[in-house]
Amino acid sequence: MNILAINPGHNGSAALLIDGELKFYIEEERLSRSKYDGNPYMGILEALKYGVDVLILGGTHPEFPQLPWTGEDPYSALVRKHNPNVKVINVGHGHHLGHAAGAFYNSGFDDAAAVIVDGSGTRKEIKLNEEGHVNSGFETETIFNCDYKEGIKPVFQSFGGNSDTQRVIADNIEMDHAITLVKAYEAVSEYLGFGFIEAGKTMGLAPYGKKDDKIPQLFIEGRGNKNVFIPNYPAGAFIDNSRHPYLTLKEDPRAWHTDPSKVTEAAKNLAWAAQDEIQSLVGDLIEKAVKMTGKKNIVIAGGYGLNCVANYYYKKRFPDLNIFVDPISHDGGTAIGLAYLLHYTETTDKTKRPLKTLYLGPERKETYDFGDIETTKVKPADIAKLISERNIVAMYQGRSEAGPRALGNRSILYDPTDPKGKDTVNKVKGREWFRPFAGSMMQEHFEEWFDTYGMEESPFMMYAMDFKLEKHGECPAITHVDGTCRIQTVTKEQNETYHTLIDEFRKITGVPILFNTSFNLAGEPLVETLDDAMRTIKNSDINYLYLPEQSLLVEYPYNDSVVEDLGEEAA
Image (tube, rainbow, N blue to C red; front, side):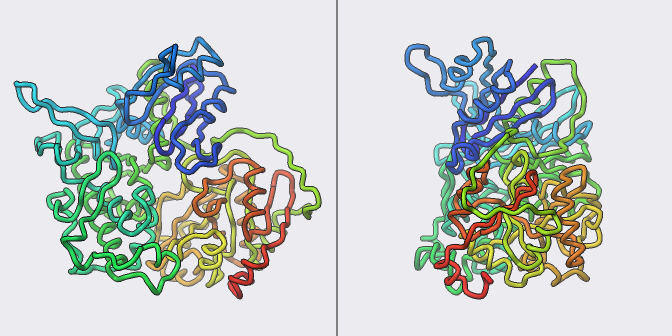
């Protein structure tokens, strides 16, 4: 049975199971080239190439637009026009359930407690009394008890809403118009000029801040302080800085995104406070999950699961727990979860299928007419030498990565030992000065370089980890201001080409790590096709593209005007 599930909403996605195996996943933005595109029509068309028996409609809202004449929703209609025999199931009411299922079935655990920490899931109504009065709110945090026999059952649910949502507190449910964890993080991100959906930038700024008594108390009893935050469900939230003069904005915060001299202490310290307080409260929620379920296996999903700083904090705080963070923990991953949920509830199959790869994008046979663009036949050692000489090299190969992290198939690579490397690549990509970069390393050297807290590998780049003290200063381009690096470990089995390239770099430099960032420019999705890759090269100051499947190096000249602006840092 081929099960196609989609998430219509931001991070719109399509996921396909074939006889229980996850064979395909794509986010719509990669195909449409529109950031956060929420309508996965192109993803559906890619999935239909494999054959589809069942279509699952996910998302946060069960109601979809109806088309004229047939009254169908547009997704069902698109599939029907290719295969009229496809069965359609609408489970739009199960957003957090989709998160939990994706995390649990990807983990490989026999059983677990799922901790979902999200901004705004499905809107639900709760009966308040026998007279029929109801209260409504949006899913924010949920704890599920998960196993293969009993399925996935909620044991605790928290909801948030706007001013019309009444306060309800019980053993297994909370509802209030005071915002919760992710909404508070979104409000801080909005205040900092990033937009509520760009919370990763707040995470990058946070280590530049420190504890500051002038920052108002952000949380009271686990909920956002109503004197600080204004809810705006189901979208973001806002900070009421009219009550807090220290937080009053004196100019557009975007002014300091490119000029570090303009960033205020209030901005840095508010980011620090949000990161520090929220990760601690999520830790408390993990403790609650252990107490309520008795489980020592914990799986984490929802938008906050992408907070790699917090994920490492959990590893340090809970050394006796087995923690798995879903690498596609944002809304796109709910498509995977809902597909798995149908498979495991509607068949007798109880096989565990731990997630082994994120190279799940479309399989492509591509050609490109390079014309008079210079190309050269190369070996991995040639590329390693080029990188060691501090050239920026983009690499394009194979199937694209699922989720937001570039893992060597759609990556921009550089020398991690360059002290100016972060500033150089941030300027070339058009990113803010304070944002850190990741590294990819040979798995066999993992414990030599990082405090791993029992982890044997980090294949999906979900943790910002501390360098060991003796390695401090060796990779300044990928070391954040707090001494951490978001690191990916690579084995030959996972990605032989990438592992070989890193090894060749090690032979030259003694460092088994490459500077790795996503192959895109600021504000754009990761490249998906070779056409996308070449367009990005032509529109940027990246002048080398490595195509390992063809043993080919493409060289495209810099834009001279931008090189002059970068000065010595581009040299």
